[in-house]
Length: 115
Length: 224
Image (cartoon, chains in turn blue, brown):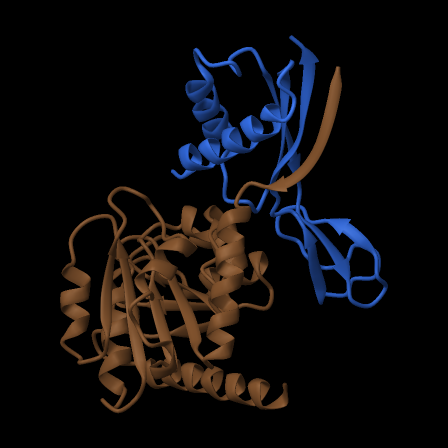
């Protein structure tokens, strides 16, 4: 249960960004969460909603993009989504494949409007 | 509407401190291992077995994290190596800045092996890089053999799985073959050692693993 501290960091970063544009307000916060990020999207949403209540960010929408695990085959270089931990290459059957993404925990974007 | 793309890591400050720590460990030729597990899997017992086997002259140090109490540090300090408790006061994992702070009054040039015992928790510690050379996940056979599937991020990020308490295998429904298979499904390259901190079975294999890591560290340093 570290989503509260993650949510706090997200809002710090959002506020830092908002501070650069004082005449605008944040209308949407975009996050990117990989399946291997170790973060529960529902718990994070709950924490963010609780923290923004009665602040300037209260009306901002939240968009969370989930990212599946992607691997790359060491033989045929095929890139593929790993489903149910099946990390063998679906194209050539090679079992040695390399992790490329799916552990993201990122503030992807903020959307701003004139206030 | 005005979208500002950021692509900013939420834990960038932790990652920055962890990268600094990793560099300092490399400068001082320190092997840092981060032990993670659910509560009660036997991290402290494994550290007791580990410290017991080292000669007093060997340069080992221990940081042990808990939400409350210094019980683990007291248990581990009796082996005579520098040992420090990190009490997080509620935080469910160790963060890089806690390691940085704990190391502030230690001479890194006097340490070869730094063992970090994380807070017992299979979720959150997986997200926080501490600058370690490897994460080691401890799973006891008193738990479910499907833990690797339930907590994939932790097993994915760990180089070694230590299956502990194998002396209990006759009394519990834990299926070793399943546990190995589940761990390898999540992380095909994971190494696995089975042992019992109570009877000592498998401990030599664990010691050889650490020795191997200490040696390959020296070799890689010699090359650079």
